[in-house]
Amino acid sequence: MSIKTLWFGFGGMLGLLALFLGWRALTNDYTYQGSLIDPPVQAADFALNDQQGRLFRLSEQRGRVVLMAFGYTNCPDVCPTTLAQFKQLKSALGADAEVVRFVFVTVDPERDTRERLAAYINSFDPTFIGLGGSREELEPVWQKYFVYQQKRETGSAAGYLVDHTSRIYAIDKDGNLRLTYPFDIEREFLLNDVRHLVRE
Image 1 (cartoon, rainbow, N blue to C red):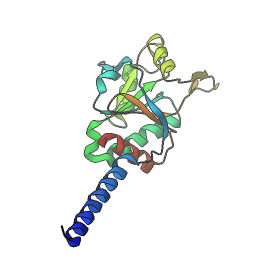
Image 2: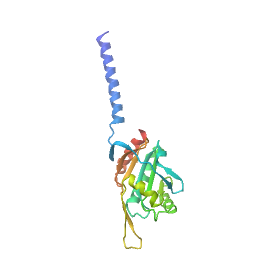
Image 3: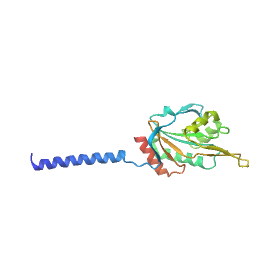
Image 4: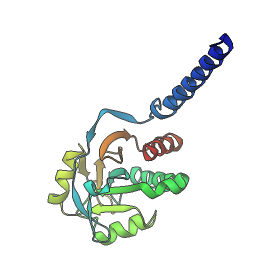
């Protein structure tokens, strides 16, 4: 075998190695912008009725990315900001949004009736899922996700407020809780993370 043949063979191997390493970098070296749960844990399952009265079970969402937030329809700031973020994200995702579920779980069961949840959720996007129920049904879900919620009297005609956890939870297509985010996460950061989860 000539030196020339060996050289070209070696060059070809280097080229293949570079392609492989480049592919590895694209697939494995992505840096998430959210708070990474490492190693991932199986997201705690639950079942609640949505704003249409249909049963939503988290474990039945395998094959989809789930973005979940906790809040209430009378929330003056965090909740509308989160749902507006979801709406913008869905639009930016384009076709990838087909495999993403946007879920909003109430922390105010006394006021958030099915009708009220439906009107509130539909004002952002009718495909979003609003989950409610009785306090007895919701408390186990709050506990599973370490959600704080506490009524706070304001003395105003608007009634009480609810102080609550404002994180966004990202669950991957295998049902693993992978990341959490502050409600005011930069949209591009969240968009890039969700795209990566969709394409895993």
